[in-house]
Image (cartoon, each protein chain N blue to C red):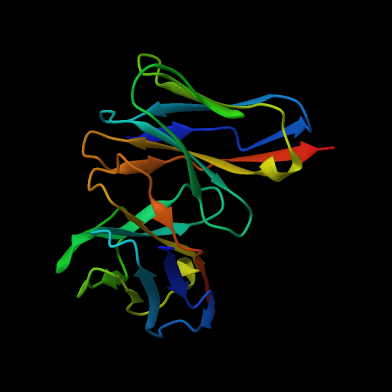
Length: 114
Length: 109
């Protein structure tokens, strides 16, 4: 069965360190997304990609970067981790570029920045 | 600005019916989604409405009124496993998804 996975599931790091969160999907979807989820807020879009070599900034992209070298993977990098980036991070993928179909979410990565 | 409002928390009894409301103000509209999210898990798709009216899918139904900027999710014959957060999300004119903060539904026996 097709799936979307994230690693690690839990990560504790220190302020100033670079951190990379992995996302891998076997749906063969062109469209992939990174969100963060914090209490009291809806899911907020960080970055998204509509295909290989395509990346776009979302609502809360400052301090984050992504790269898309193949269809399956969209790693999210925190260049210099800050305490404000403590959150749960979800990766998602979809078949339709226009979101008019369901998004499939990974299980999430809980990141703590001390 | 763009805004989606949902109640923060609701409580209902097992076997009963509950309605979770969502109101939105967005720049354009290309559809509204409902997702279910159990604690510590990923959101999963429940429904997508783009036309006015009620769509029924088993115990769950979703209603949309575009003129009122309003939707609701109706859950019937509540079960303990329905305890979860329910997320409303609107697709705006740029086909960007705007998410509400979610409604935490607590089911009591």
